[in-house]
Length: 181
Image (tube, rainbow, N blue to C red; front, side, top):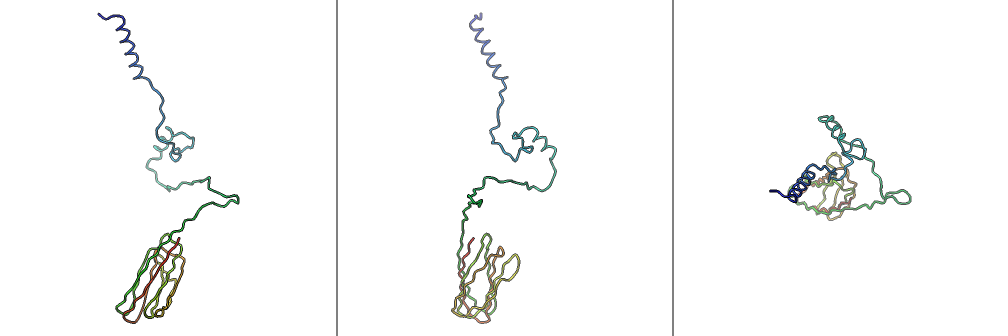
């Protein structure tokens, strides 16, 4: 026979189990708030955003969105306090031309602002500088034997092309390049 004490313990255990199963506590999302998902800008991502997304499903258009950026670091005169970081790249090229005619080589200049180079040759030759992506020629000059020539250019395209020409045999040309942002 069941005594009174066991009955009370069983009823209380059943009540606690039932209350635990049916208790609904509101829970918040573990994801941080994303203002790009809050399409009506009310500070809450709720069923309205899901409803609006469902209505707009399958539509197409320009994906850009106006952005207002605030809290720029500004000094007392209203100028931006931004540190500009300069990047440089140096490289050298040596051309040995065993036949009369032309030679050329290219190098990427994407992301750089200026390029400087110095050129030496053991015979007279003609050098032309072009920027690929626009196919325009920037400069053409003659190099005399064993005389160094320095040039500095603003970068006008993503790739620089150096064209060398010598009507004589067995020329050697040395280039030393320096690019900066």
